[in-house]
Image (tube, rainbow, N blue to C red; front, side, top):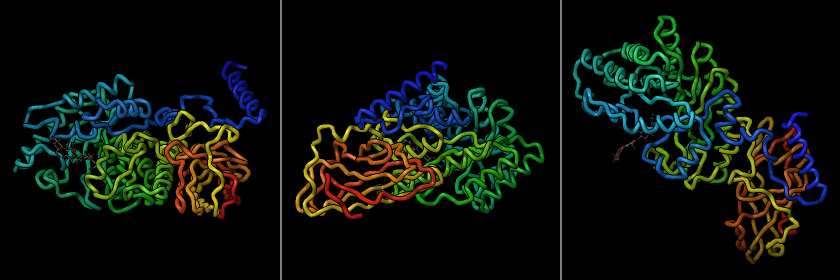
Length: 479
Ligand code: G3I
């Protein structure tokens, strides 16, 4: 038996001993046999994918920001630093300082780099909008692409050569479309190929996440380019989604582009919701991220997933959609959200006790500051979001008593075949059978008439039944 298996056998024996000894202190999820699947990037790599994030140079000096990024991601897209207004602020004068800093950081961490974006109607340098002739604009566009792509040549895995050129099923009437005409897109791709033969060249757009007029128009352009030998290697699907609205044909749409002979990349994934975020929406968001990741893994040529930011703290969403936000995998305090757990699980990773949102469980027999049972009873609401191999839950515990509870333990029995893989707002032990959920340091009080909410993710073997009985600090709850 090789060392690897020896270690695993020893670990299994150790857990067995602990369990047999009646000590229920069990890590909610046993450390992965290969720790290399304990982060988003490492789990994705095990599936042959890059899991990346958009990064803002202005935040890389913040320790939690850059540490979270470096730990969890294996790819980088500069959020704004490679856009025309930054890289060529005046005609023929290039500025790469901010982008170079991000590229150097990514290279020093062996990360893949996505260039974003060479030609886009937004964030153009003002001088571009003053051009009045198509000939001059074509020359300026070619010079811009050549200047930028040459500077980064050899360092870019994928370039977003042209961004958001369609408006529904037709061309957006940008300055490029109006002055140069339809050919500006293929001219951009040819210039990019000439400047950097090593990068894969992509078209990138939003609201293309299902089969619709816009995505079909782009597919037709891809087929036309392929037929005419215009260099195009991939299509980016931004996937700026609204909670609960992942198109049912998301995977089929990706597949039809792969079938046309291009890589498909999820390039700007986020799932926005009204803020402050409700537990229900956070659960739905977790399932939305799972759906997108599962769809990408099901399409061989879906080679990378990029989320549009590291943390909710700096997401573009609140500035653009007032009252919306909470769109990413880490919250504004860099805590892992349910969507982090569902994404990591969907990637085949293992949510470990090292995850801040998943705490090592403690034995319910340990000294317990739990207060006595609630006088007047309690009520439990147990909501589930299930899929073929797992589910997430949102559990709300209501104190119907007349006095506050300071310290709570909710006991229930998981139906057979179900096993907890990650939890938030509670510690859960053991991971199956008769389990207890205990409060965290920050949510131990349930006021008279008040409630607390926690959740967990679990695997199942087809049995998605709910627990039938709950006790709160030993007192039966209605459910
Ligand atoms: O850099 C200036 C700063 O000097 C100035 O003081 C400040 C005043 O508001 O503005 C700063 O520029 C901002 C820029 O981000 C850099 O932070 C712009 O106002 C702001 O509009 C710009 O927003 C970016 C947005 O693209 C522009 O459309 C977002 O950060 C960025 O996340 C977003 O990303 C786009 C993708 O590139 C393409 N797909 C859609 C996606 C979301 O819009």
